Length: 392
Image (cartoon, rainbow, N blue to C red; front, side):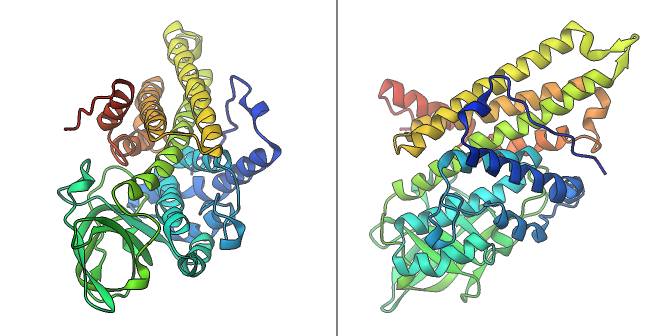
């Protein structure tokens, strides 16, 4: 069982920009991860299972809806605190962060922003406490980067709606009690609708065979003439912009989380370079290894500055979708490159589960694709700076 020796790296003294509350949030999350998650994460990843007993602890450290107001069970924290929690969770494992960020940004966020007061009171406290876990149904088997082409639909049947269709690649689906599903009405307008486990015709088969995010449960959502009460429709916003605004929140969390994965790979590689001897001296004393490590901490520091500023803009309500896309794309790409370089520093040991690097590398292959692929985020930036839409 690997001992978690991580202490953190702050080359540009970013701690001086954090409040005492931010530091307390970080230290609390880090201590919990080290004690409860690090000792078992390699085994969970190998088994391909999410350790569901961690849900209570995730809730206790504010991992579910940290920015949701206290009146609905959230911690009422700011966006930087949310990002810090995501960074500490993904420093351990991307799947752990996925479980948390899906619950926070893709389930609790739309209910809070677009739901009725009755919906907020019914769902948010149970989601914040971890009593209920939720999932987000947008991606379909034939519609990933083009969610507007979705075919999942619902029809008015008097006192209820009838929902039909399928969603794929859904984190938390196999054990979620609640699904926020995006579907088209009879006029073709996209709406969010809350579907609960136990509704007849609603099933959530588990997806198997993943070589990435193995410590996160992924499944499908199947709707076969599911009767959904009309009171479960989210009335606050419709159209594709509604689910995309939720993805903005999740992508922002990913931008922070990816830094955590990069920090863990850098931390392991740095320590290994100081201890591993070749040719009668530590390998960290050789120029090529120093080049790798110096470039790692440079890229991490750039990502930290980028994301902190984005957090300030989120707090002020001024961050744009394009700015969030830039941070998500940059930081995940940065993390995956650092994982690959760190693996080389460790040589053959880098592919073993004695160290976390190969697991991070495999996980990041999913993170660089989901919630907007690497290339799609590039085109979002391109459209924003040129004014030309390359998607059509």
